[in-house]
Every structure is written in C-alpha cells, then in structure tokens.
Length: 429
Image 1 (cartoon, rainbow, N blue to C red):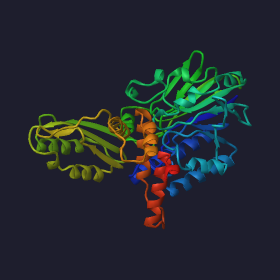
Image 2 (image 1 turned 90 degrees about the horizontal axis):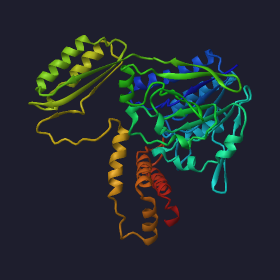
Image 3 (image 1 turned 90 degrees about the vertical axis):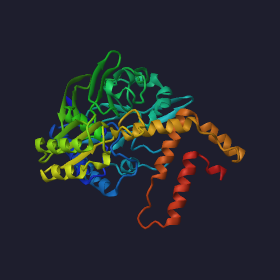
Image 4 (image 1 turned 180 degrees about the vertical axis):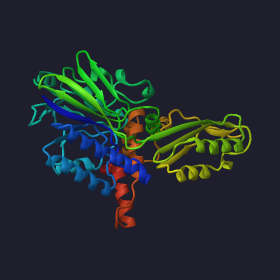
C-alpha cells in the first residue's frame, strides 16, 4: 500500500498584514510536517503555491528551506503552476525552484502536429504515473485541454494521476458559480485520481468514466471571503490518499487550523451612524477575541449621518486590547441614503477587477493614429476574452516595484520592455 498527500492553493504571500502572512505560512509548514507524519511517499501541490509569480525573497528562502527538509526525508514533491504563480512573460519563481531540484514540475509536453502530448513522470518509490496541465489566468488553459492527445493518455497503463489547476463546470459548488471553468469532458478519462486546484472549496467526487476528482481547497485562504467561509465552518486542510498501485483504497482529510476565525454581521439598515457605532461597541463586549481573527461585516443604508462618522478605529482597538490576532471591519456595503451607489457583483478583488476590465475592453477602440502594423496587432489581441487577459497581464506589469538598488531609469525601461512583451510588440518598436 502506498500513500500521497494532495495540497492546493497555498497562496503564500497573499496577505499584506504581517500576522495573516505568518499564519498562512504556518498552515503551509504544518501541512508538510503532517504529510511527513502520515508517512506519505510523495506530495502533490495543484498550483498557486505562491500568490504572485515573483514573491518576496524572504518568503521564498523560508519555502526553499522547508522543501529541502522534506526532500532530505526522501519525499518527492510534484507541482503544476496555478493561475497566480504562472507568468506568460517572465520567469516565475516556480521555474527557478524546480530548476534547483526542490520539486518536479509535472507538465512535460511536446507538440505533435495539432496536438499536445503530455509525458508521464513515474514516481520512483510507488510506480505512480503523474501528468498534468498548469493553470492560467482567466482559465486560458482551455486551449491546452482542447489540444490534448487523449489517446496517448488513455493508452498508458498503471496507477495514473492527473494534476490540474482549473475549476470544472459540473463540480463547482454553488457559491463559485461565477468562476471561470472548463467542462468535465475536457479532462482526459480513465485516470485513477484527478488532483485539482483553484476551487477554494473542498470537493471529493468519484465520477463514472473518470475516477476520483478532488479539490482540497486552500490551507488557510487568500481573501477575506475565504476567512469568512472558515468562520462558517468550512474545513481547511489537505487530502491523504492510499492506493495499492491499481486503485484508490482509502482517503482522509487532514484539517489545518492555525487560528480560529470569528465572523459577525451587523445590519445597519435604517439606523443612524451613532446607533451603528453603539451596536458595534456593544458587539465587542460579546466577542471572545483573545488569540482569534475577528471579521465584522456591516451592511445597510444609514437613515442619517455619514459612514465616516462611525469610529471604526475605536471598535478595532477595543478588540485588539482583548487580544484579537487581527481585526477587519468590512463596511463596503454600508452607505447613506444620499450616496450614489455602484453595485459590483462579487466580493473579491479578482471578481471586481475582472468585471471592470471586461467593461473597459468591450468598449475599447484602437487609436487610428497608431502605425497600421500596431493597429492590426492590437485588434487581433483585443477580442473580449483575450483582451481581458491582456489587460490583467498589463495591470500585473504596471504593479511592479523597483528592485533593490535599481535606478529609476532602469526600472522604467524594465517596465516598458515587459509591457512590450505582453503586447507582443517588441518587433514593432
């Protein structure tokens, strides 16, 4: 009997707050330590190890040390890119760590005519055959799924694992209905286990004609919505799977809880600003904040006063005094009768960003004063789906910060060159 651990969506570096960043890393380290304790033969990470493709180097150093510790125990690590740690135009830290031998990238592919043929990796200890596809922003990995040489994947014998980072239409929980996804038919049939990532919910389904399709969800979470779900009872952790070389025999979910999350909602509908403040202060006396993450969401339309009249800082300070690890008061949905509201579907930054970019791209017109060759290239790039992805890539480039000791002119030139690469206009300079 053999055993492997299946992790996904670690999102290391997702949090700006130092304590949340520390808790996220603690969850990751604990998952690897528990994998060792469970005596697994190998570990699979189904994408989004990091939250960005070039994370903080101090964080990278910590991860490198942990991976080296795991490898020294004789445990192999297999991984694919996720939609966050993938980069279309620069070398990702995942590439660098893979080149250093800290883990094996599962995606080994070659183009044969119009198809993509994936090469299996065979785990030395167990004989398990592992193959997969990485995720890309906006589910643009669809085109790779469509081009897969399915026959070569089906003809391979043995215990087979397909690693991927995409949501599947038929398996998405209701709460993730708006998430970009691929149809189940895109997955190559006949595998014993499909190690999924990207969905931040726990999923385990034995699908006829396929096999076990599993998503462990995040180890900690990358958004406040993730933390709210944790407070509502969503378990965080990873799967440990036993197999005998032919079939999945047993499995269990190993829970990771590095901090309790307390979530409260306050209805401010029809109340004055002072009344909402009083209710918030009363709420702080009832919350057991010591050692916990505290999230409060305030909704509704104030009958009088402004949102700015409410002393949220005082509320936060009181909870910190009671020992809260972290406090966040979400007041986005709190407004006044006089305010002009803008309603955006979705709570996460990514969902809002995607919608706004879709709206901008759909109305975008190429400047007719640009050189004809540039106009032609831009028009080809700015279909609605590709244009939105292009805009997101550009946004990522423009968020770049100067490197240590990098001069202003060098930084500006680097950003310019990366922008041209994204637009694929280098040859038109």
